[in-house]
Image (tube, rainbow, N blue to C red; front, top):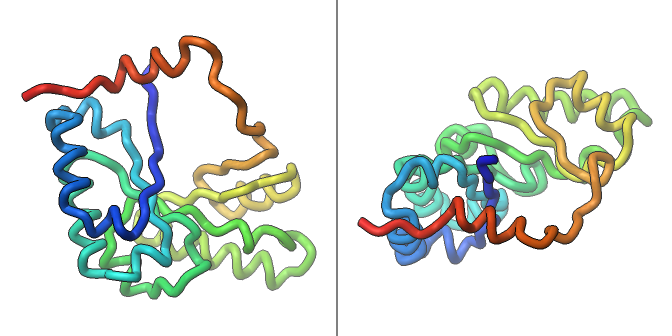
Length: 174
């Protein structure tokens, strides 16, 4: 079993060159490790210092990591910023799904949020999917992935699972 890890980072992390150096040292530039890592940064954090975030995204992608823009649509990302950031994935903010199915214009808006990144070849994720109706609507709209309580609640790791996962993600020496 190859464990994949998604890691949320703050705006401070995205502008800290020491964090990137630490990631590089931890993985030893081993792409078999970094290709299993998705680094998530919120849309609001990403645009707080767009130039630095672009550099951060480019560095991560250079290591082989995937980069996700979290809470997409909740902040102020323009089409231009989405293109400039060059992320691999957008996680569409759950606030857009709360009334999905109740009004046709809600569905149209969600479809536009899904189509925009897809037109840039960016993968879409629907966050906080809580029921089958929402899951079906998002699937029909073309969302690539979904996450939320409809699929399962968070649970504690079983004994040995963490050790096994960490064993596969051992720090590398150069």
